[in-house]
Amino acid sequence: MQIIQKGNQYTNSSSRDGHAPIAIVDHISGGTMNSMDSWFTSSGNEQSSAHFGVSKAGEIHQYVPIDRMAWANGLSVIAIAKATAPLIKELSPVNPNKYTVSIEHEGTDGSLTEAQFAATVWLHKYISAEVQRIYGKPIAFDDKHVIGHFQVDPVRKPYCPGPKFPWSRLYAALKTKEDEDVKVDKAETIVNGNRLADDSILIEGKVYVPLAAVGEALGAKVNWNNVTKTATLTIKGAK
Image (cartoon, rainbow, N blue to C red; front, top):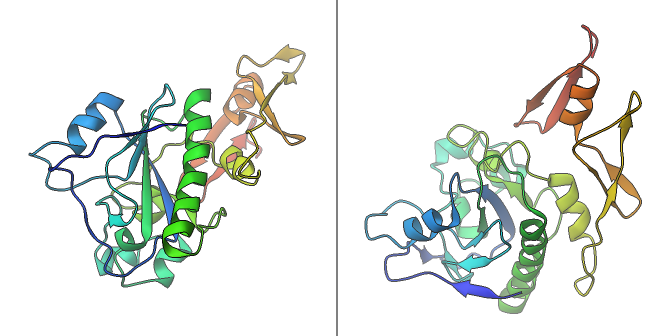
């Protein structure tokens, strides 16, 4: 895939001060790709930046070089104590910006198009390979080293990258070899004799079912906890 360079003289970045990147943090932009490009290259932006952005069309934009620190996950020492990601706590009091690479995704709720999902999987693998090339050790593809912004900063960003961000699907796809395509098949789910409008996904023999759609088909209520990444489905007073 092609990476389009978008950073300019106004794009915020700093030195990593000798720290190697060891984690990828996923974000949601809260707007369009055009607004993301404009904000990260604006002379009036003196507070934030990201390494990469992924559009709904599957385009990848780069704003900050991997060997530089983007302003995406910065925390005070006090705020670090409130992080839910084990890695952030372990490395306290180091600013998380110094050892993370950030990816913004165009959108508002974390749902990704197929092109966007394929692009972000490729990008995660590209980042890990580049980190290995530059620093000698790749970024691990597990839930300790590939995390959401809400795990870094649950106070200010409790929903980033959104309740619909496909974490399970992403982790499954990142387990494929570097030279393999992400193999994703549609799966049909039938509840009470009715086919769900939202298709399920089949990855490596495992079916990933849209819980919200299942709950709706059963007349149940689905509650999502973005901190613990758990869903509770309630049917007629029972859980």
